[in-house]
Image (tube, rainbow, N blue to C red; front, side):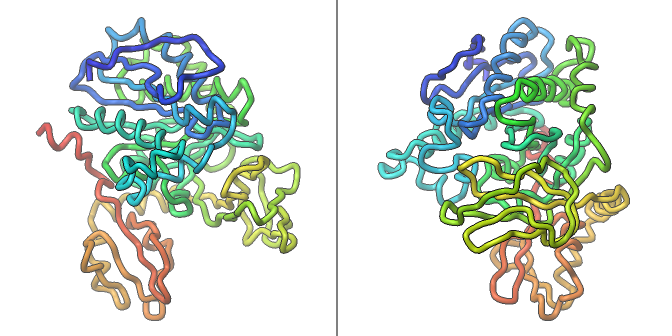
Amino acid sequence: MGAMKAVSKPYQSEIPSGEHLVSAHVGDASGPTLIVVGSLHGNEPAGYRALLNVSVQLESMEKWLNGRVYLIAGNTRALNDSVRFIDYDLNRSWTRANMASLRTPRAQKTSEYRELAEIDGILDSILITARSEVYILDLHSTSADGEPFATVGDTLRNRKFAQMFPITILLGIEEQLEGTLLEYFNNAGAVTLGFEGGQHDSDETIENHTALVWLALVNTGILNADAVPDLDTHRDRLAAGKRGSRVVEIRYREAITADDAFQMNPGFSNFDPIVRGQILATNIRGPIRAPEDGLVIMPLYQKLGEDGFFVGRRVAGFWLALSAFLRRTKVQRLMPFLPGVAADPDDPDTLIVDTRIARYFPLQIFHLLGYRKLRWTASDLLVTRRKHDTQSPFIERTE
């Protein structure tokens, strides 16, 4: 993608609407591709500011790049107004229905649809020219304080990449959210990783994002470790806040609407322990209690948002190793032969589970084999496997 010229900019308070390409840096075009998106939510400026910082330094390092690097600004119009979004949440808009209607006159009247079309055009042009593995990072921040962490769609390729960073990893959040950028491009075959770098307006969040990008450049093989100044400092910065198990599974999401008058109780930070029945928040119906023991994640302390909080639980390393073993031995092929489990006739990667019969197969069993929940329909549970759990479509086409 050599036609995209690197653009280096100092920090600016405003970004021209629709100008998403912060910079492009191409060394060996046959090597891996790293795409980093910052500030998909306009009230999360740290991601964009970190990309500006990295861009300036990368310009003088292109001769050492063993691949391609693209730094992408997210919701430019909302970023200028310092709001999460203008019409719709851009990171809930990457659905099949929206992508099919992107360029209709009605869609183009909304701010986020224009942003969606602009970003999708850039990313598509990068992906179709990829000649090796493609990695996509999505930089975010939270309204509450707390340690940085990664969100990962549960494929073995995603897990392997995420575990190269000294950060806590969340699995299963994609089951709770619809229309995220990373889920859309994960389904296209890219290795994806979301990163919550800290509180929205903290300078430390910018530094955490910056550290993650430099580590990603090394972990993807695009830069050699000795080419990155202060690499150990970046690694130590991300490792400093980590506590307990590195992998946490999302178990519950408190979905909210603007009419709920949701109010998170003060004082919660990411990964604070909670107990079943503890009052975490209130809404127009009364107190909201923790559904189980666990860890509170992303408690909402801002006006806009669809997620009040999440509840997670630590995952033992044994289950991760067992899951990887079972997937590689393709045990999942036997699932349609179990009582109450049938393959979807329209999609071989989707199973229809009659929970009246297969009541002894909880959702966690399907998680082990790489399935994620799609939805409930009456007594049936629909689960699906990602097509690119273990193999990259971008590498395959060069063989």
